[in-house]
Amino acid sequence: MSIFYLVAFLAIIFALMTIFTKNPVHSVLYLVVTFFTLTIHYILLNAQFLAVVNFIVYMGAIMVLFLFVLMLLNLNEESEPMKSNLVKIMGAVAGMCLIATFLGAFKVITPDNEMVVGNAEIGLVKNLGKVLFNEFLLPFEISSILLLTAMIGAVLLAKKDPKKV
Amino acid sequence: MEGAFILEKLILVVIVFTVSLVIAMYSTLAERKIAGFMQDRYGPNRAGFGGILQPLCDGGKFFFKEEIIPAGAHRSLFILGPTLAIITACISSAVIPWGQTLDINGRQITLQVADINVGVLYIFGVVALGVYGIMLGGWASNNKFSLLGAIRAASQSISYEIGMGLSIIALLMVTQTLSMGEIVAQQSGFVNWNIWVQPLGFLIFMTCAFAECNRVPFDLPECETELVGGYHTEYSSMKLGLYMFSEYINMFVSSALMAALYFGGYNFPFMNDLGLSQNWITILGVIAFFIKIFGFIFFFMWIRWTLPRFRYDQLMNLGWKMLIPLAIANIVLTGVITIVKDTYFS
Picture 1 (cartoon, rainbow over the protein chains, first blue to last red):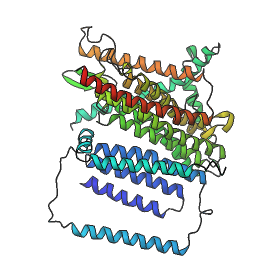
Picture 2 (cartoon, helix red, strand yellow):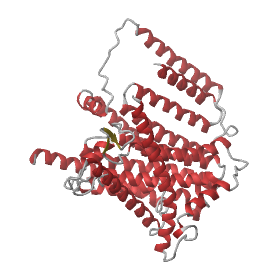
Picture 3 (spheres, each protein chain N blue to C red):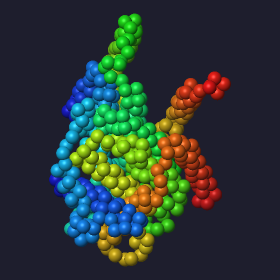
Picture 4 (cartoon, each protein chain N blue to C red):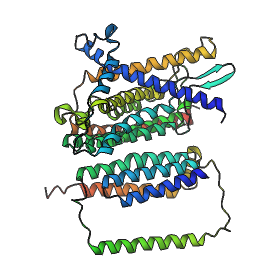
């Protein structure tokens, strides 16, 4: 349990650092460390597959792309475009809405609701695969179609119109 | 966990570390010797017998050279770059099974540091992390050539990781497990090697491994003719040494990975017919594994001194338009063959 508190503390610290650092590259690096602490959380939950996928996909691929874009744009404090106040206010309102949703959700869960203790081995690859392809086959396939659609959309947006070139 | 277990693993970790560092060190000499052989000259032969002390001299020289951090560089990230590169190179060997079990006074010792049940994915994760060392180093140097090298490294590694992952999926469909220990144990003897069922997958995997190691013909991140020195243009002294060292360790680990995944790892032909005790089989197995690894390292070097470098658009075309569709076709083919075999020939 003490490991959980240590890792949770580190996760929150690094998440805050992500927000408060001025340099965008530092920000991305702190986010990488935050993802690493989340990976440790998954390992503590005995969800090995989820842990290693989180490690590969978020730390290894998505954050590398983030860093890639930042390096290409070469953003720093001087060249950072100032956001107008309206955008800031809208951001604050949206954040408050999210907090309200979370608070509402947590209020429903009262401590006397019995905790559901599932199978402790559910996080291993074999069991997870069986659950995904038997019980949750439809949601799994639908979400993969969603990802495919997003990918095709991105390619279509990035592709130049041959008539205009 | 009892003390003896921790001690046993600790000794194993130290041995694996030492061996991979020594092999990386002598790979530099082997590379120059092989280059000499291919170009019909001697190669380094002054320090010690046949140049055997050359890597030590090179290492000593790296330590005593002046340490320069450019004025415009980002100091902490500039130091973090090579550190990350060497750390990620060293930790990826943790899940490779080096041999079977040794029986010492009734105590079974498995020659593998950690047999986690997502071993293959662990290696992927660490390899994916390895690119941060190059990216951070290149960016922190505050030099346009370094930055271009870093950006190339990032896009190259992400592109080829996809092909590599897809080629591994076909292999996993055959082996039915993600644990490195089990994958190697399944390939006992000679006819059970995965190369016989996954030849196309192996070719794709090997090409991607070359690209992930930044070796010729895919060494675009450090392409001298275009980028001076690429991502390590501004590096000097042992920091440059660490970058080079991590490249050689990566080469060693990917050779070990190819040998373990496709060429049977520590298994060798007729191992079950010799009638030797388990300890002897294990020792011979380790020797067989290292012979395979050295074979692959030689292959890496052979390619380096034979093929010219790709152009960057050719590299991207090969990765996205050739290897990824091929790997997907390989997955479909493997699936069809598995189903046909299960329904008609079981």
